[in-house]
Image (cartoon, rainbow, N blue to C red; front, side):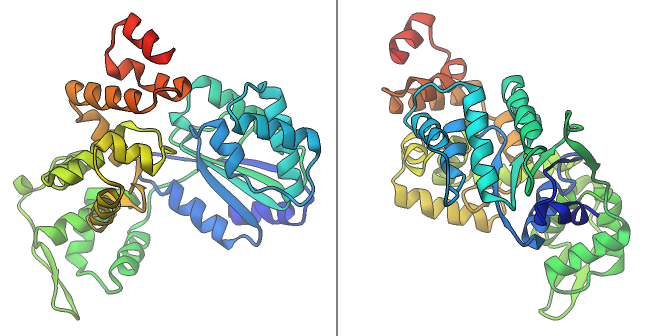
Length: 344
């Protein structure tokens, strides 16, 4: 249904701005990735809170781009001040030159009002550019001028299909029904319950067939958030993993590996080793949390003292880069005079 909306975009007949939304874990990222992979045009996915500098650098350049647009983006990349209207016009020129092209911004609900307004203005611009699509994902209904597609929970059959695809095998009917009732059709919750039951030995395989043993209710965390928190606590039992995980929690998503390693106080090789281990445990996917809900829960369980220490460490690493260092002022808990001295 969603894919069909992009046929006229691929034919460079219209521009489109579309928002996919629904509760945490409902499959917004997954369905968007499926959409982008199915389209016969280039695309780019970034987080909605990505800095404008990173956003401008990440967008590929068309073969032909007006000098004024290239000039604006070059100044922005250097950290110079460029008015939002000039940035928007320049991004519009880039997107028009890339058409057909689809741009995806994830988790709009995490953006502040200023960034949300910027993305709305970008959407208005995209609607006037033939052959360009702007897709956002959010837990909230998308603002104007985005079209709205609300994602619904999976049916029992769709849940069965997801689990079968994940396991490359059929699940016992009783186990499938237990997971379906517990997860209520939420894809993320479905997979987290599957992993939990496997780790605890309630689901096991002899290499050919999966077997099921119903767990006692008292053994199951009461919510999926508690389930994820338990997974995070297990991951943090190894000090190296704790340093890497907690630093990732507080840093911006587009933070460099170098900054990440320095704030975690590990070598870059240790960082890569920890990322590999945490990915195998299902906490990370590549170099980010496996799901935004993991970051939220990690941040919620991070003590005030730990936040303060990590934030102060980040500010010290970022001396000479006041705009980036300013992101950590609140968590650092510094006196106003101290913050001002660091930011100078």
